[in-house]
Amino acid sequence: MSYHSLDADGVYVDAGPQGPGPALMGAGSLIGDHVHNLKGEHLGLIKEIMLDMHDGKIAYAVMAHGGLLTLGGKLFAVPWEALTLDAANRRFTLNIDRERIANAPGFDPAHWPDMANQAWSAQVHDYYQHPAEPRSGQS
Image (tube, rainbow, N blue to C red; front, side, top):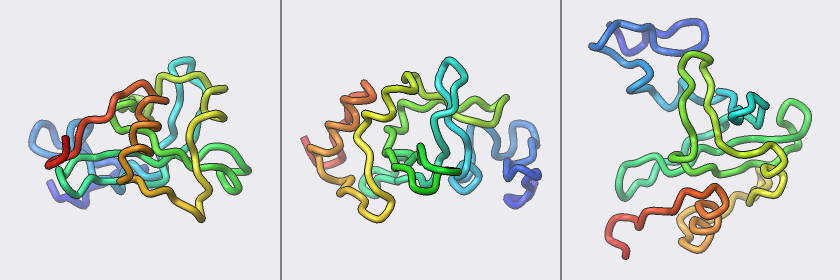
């Protein structure tokens, strides 16, 4: 199987246990995926995936919410651990009520926060009830 074997939705074509699929996916194939809560309500779209360059793990998915077709809306850094891939529906789920997204720590698309700031990170992780793990080399 070629790395470039994608279906019309940008998902890797299933080649059985040898290739990418729900257990191993390219970040680009996840950009634009919808995020729903456990009630099935639409919360937003994945706009970016942020990697922690110190430990090589995914730190956050940046989700757009609000506005017209997500234009003019806010962005939210959602801890990666708070999201669950729903491969059958080709989307993510986030265990949060839709009303809580409006109060979540978000930011304007033109003014991103310092996501490496430990105080900011703690605030975001606390909001989504997924405690932050110390970064490599930090206690």
